[in-house]
Amino acid sequence: MSTAAPVSLVTGANRGIGRETARQLAALGHTVLLCARRREDAERAVAVLAPAVPGRLLPRRLDVTDTEGVRALAVAVEAEFGRLDVLVNNAAVNYDTGRRAVSVDLDEVRSTLETNLLGAWRTAQAFLPLLRRSARPRLVNVSSESGSLAHMSGGTPAYGVSKAALNALTRKLADELRAERILVNAVCPGWVATDMGGPGGAPVERGAAGVVWAATLPDAGPTGGFFRDGEALDW
Image 1 (tube, rainbow, N blue to C red):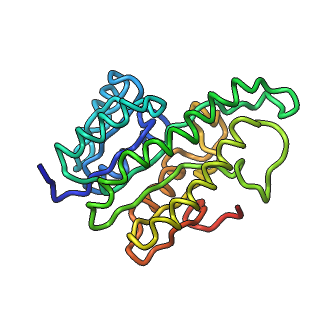
Image 2 (cartoon, rainbow, N blue to C red):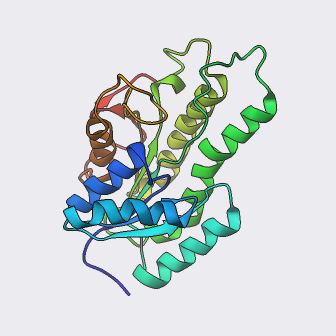
């Protein structure tokens, strides 16, 4: 079954940037698949947000490290909607501020990459056939300036390297999909006051607004870029 409203999917959307991104897209009238590793977490977020937005918010279970689960959701979205207009790869783990590259446990690094890089990669591959059916397909990878090679320093090794790799994936996908008019961009929300970011950051609404900007770009908008608040960042 198709729908006239844009269909968007946001991973890791039960809290923080992901949840606010889902809310803002629904406020624009999108049908939003709000995804979380546990369905009950997605349902709780939808119960809070749905009454205040005109678009539909639908809870979905999605663990981006589970290949079969990702594929199963893609099949379900195809059956229900026939396409996907926006994919926001937001799910991320392990802002490892207490670690150093010289001593970090590589099993921890591997686990971080499994979600932050391979999870986004896996999800993009699974949903690409549905994005190809959209009239205005957009793919947004929620990244971080800690993954910028131009500004990278020591500390947070697993997280920083995973986001640098996610930026590289963004460039690869954008170039390969350019001829199919699928716009692919990376967005740094900035330091935002969330469970991961901690207190003292900007309001979550501001961080999510940059993600929504990339998710709703016009057809002539950029692809293969790295942005914060709609402004280009150094790779």
